[in-house]
Image 1 (cartoon, rainbow, N blue to C red):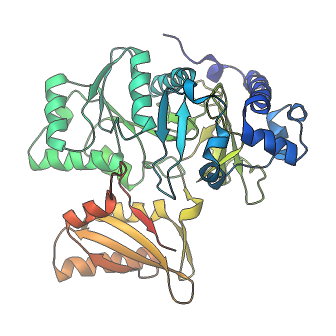
Image 2: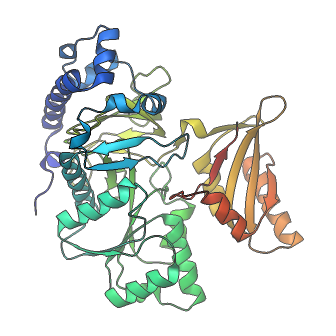
Image 3: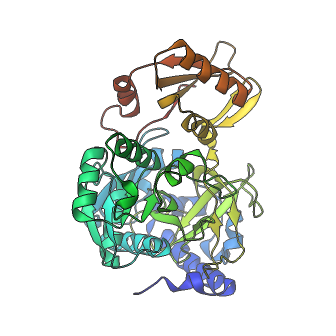
Length: 429
């Protein structure tokens, strides 16, 4: 089995490797990227002046708005070289097209191969994919390609339909699942309702995508505990985005997602675009390495995380990222309380009286934030309503508005149009 070797090498080796690849990237951008060639010229910064990762602070950052407004200017190859057109989910703002060449697709497969190896994946495993592989979704394609490179088995069931997922689990006996954690909870609920012995199944681990399963101290959050308390499987958390074309995946130690240093440079920046110290929150800012069609330099993802740089007990010496604390644009200032969406989700996930939800934020007549929670309650009773409101008041110290809706209505809110991800945060500010 071929592993990505630098993760287990010394920090000095990793630093040299990243500096070398950064130099190659800068020359590539100067030659092929209309957008970055202009950035170098306007700011009078010759690429040769940037010799190490620490020199990156001399360069301006790239934002999601830059990518949205000048999408085509980021292309470094002719249209004839593009093999695949993917797109961001458009969770915050309009989607962005991310094009890939054949080399980029190979790099993507290598990335996910490394991720599955990090998550203790082996050739003997069979992975059941509980996610979409269509609608320009890069991640689904990446998982599929990475598992193929690993040489393991694949069951492409797609998202949803718990009955079909369980039918395939008992018929084909996968050893691992790849799924959104909140859907794994629904799988468990379905199993309990239909008296399915989940711990008698072949599944021994879950690669959790798209949602946090841990707190920032790496303990399991409410969602993670709901899974672990019912299903005796190993949980591995992941973090990625379409733009970075790379993933941070936990090893068996469960102490943060490991950087793959051959594929990405990551900085965590404060409000002044300066690096934060280990253990301090900062905005995840990435520089892609080895990307051919649409490489990015100092791209601010909007995600707030912390990083840790001490060696991991697994033997890797790579930087590790904490779970996402929140998205910069999803910060809520509600009646004197500052709240990030993941913290609100964790609160709602912990309520037995709440079956599903969407949080909506809007500006009131004086310009401050208001929160409206659309909730599918477990029971349509006054007692249930009282418990929900009292719990929210106790935990938040303030009372958001609550609107009760049906499961059908929440489904329409979470999946408007041809959406592929459940939308649980609606920002109308």
